[in-house]
Image (cartoon, rainbow, N blue to C red):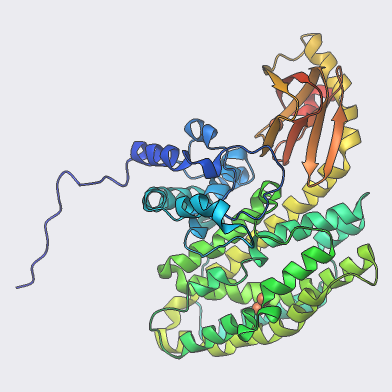
Length: 477
Ligand SMILES: [Fe+2]
Ligand SMILES: [Fe+2]
Ligand SMILES: [Fe+2]
């Protein structure tokens, strides 16, 4: 007779207990690696990434977010933390000065941190991805033939669609070079570790499709020739456009949607029960990339001139034609033939989810470009809104801060519009890497909800007040 083990009662660890999760999250955050920093850029240290862990205790990750909250602060915080957790699975080494970073290295991969991460991770995944699963619905009866027609139709539609919204936003920006670099920074989060998430899928034993997937991974890794590894090509591209090519140098400037996209691929690759979903997602990515890479190369040349470094994008416009075909012909099709048509809805789900996240990233990026371009406009909105506050027409919550020279507010977003008012001193209000608006005493700016920003004090002391106005448009109408 088969022996079925009895359940331990009470359970040794109740993994469904939100209090346990919260305590583990707060403890996970109690690390030198994750505290606030006094610099905008991380210098060659892949283990240091600010998570603003002092805020963890105020955030509620226990209930999944709604899709309309996907760009709010709790989401940003969850995404920064989750990416850090995922990357504790990858080997990262600094380029130089290992000895001085040895303690960080040991801490990043410590058993303590990994054990806490193991409790925290599923909660953050549920918090972020439940809404995505609800947002995409896959219905109807699918067959191998209808799947092929569906995916082919998508590939054809990319040929027809001319405009790429992100490129249009860059070319229409009042500071095109800054906008282009902002996009490169978003891509760097993923591309400097390119195919690491994919690599999670190559171990094991799953028949001929395993070897086909392995071929794509080998391509991404340049067949073991370091100079042709895709991440190396991207490093060269960053360097050529005056950006630091080390992983996560611009950690503070990743938008929520860029982190989310990166996390999504890690999620579906790490959790092997989502393998078929991964196949749909990777088909979408490889296929969409063929066109977006060609557009990106054109855009870089338009912005930086003929000397722009575009090899990374030209290589992908070429190789991803093959990858898209390989994924479909040698992986998706045989997988359906072997494992049955019941896996198709999962494949379609992955495809749709990846597409939706790509669209979200595009929208988020375009909005951030106009937010950064609008520095003057948002500053000019200050007097009108501040007058309403002074007159008592609106009575928002307020908080006053006193900060010394050089104090840096790590980048973040707010869930509603805010008004920043400088009582005394000088603040540099930062809206992107190397981009800021100077605010003097009596001045201020409207801060748009969900828009990434930070600040640094440029006087011996600065006193400023933040008013939570909710919707600034209601204050100026
Ligand atoms: Fe690649
Ligand atoms: Fe590829
Ligand atoms: Fe803020």
